[in-house]
Image (tube, rainbow, N blue to C red; front, top):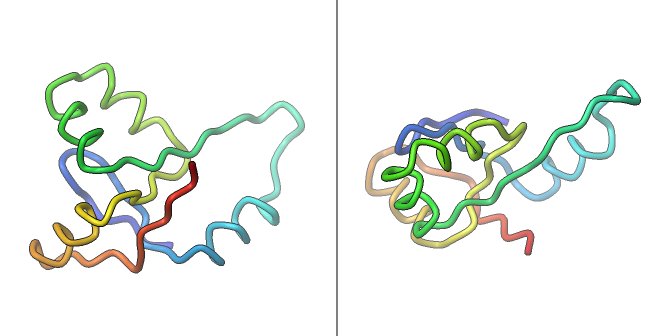
Length: 88
């Protein structure tokens, strides 16, 4: 999974299968905890105005695009994402 920098946040360009493989096969210590975020355009706008919110998004192990607007923006910016990955 490659990282692509968007609006001060590293989004992963991956497909659903790669994300599931990461979650299932990633070796981790018993005490290690992490979280995954799926920002849509609205959340990226909030993060651009709120540094604490950006810090929460940026602290995630994976940031995955949830929103066709994020995917379309990637195409327009010349930094395409593989697919939209909605998780909620």
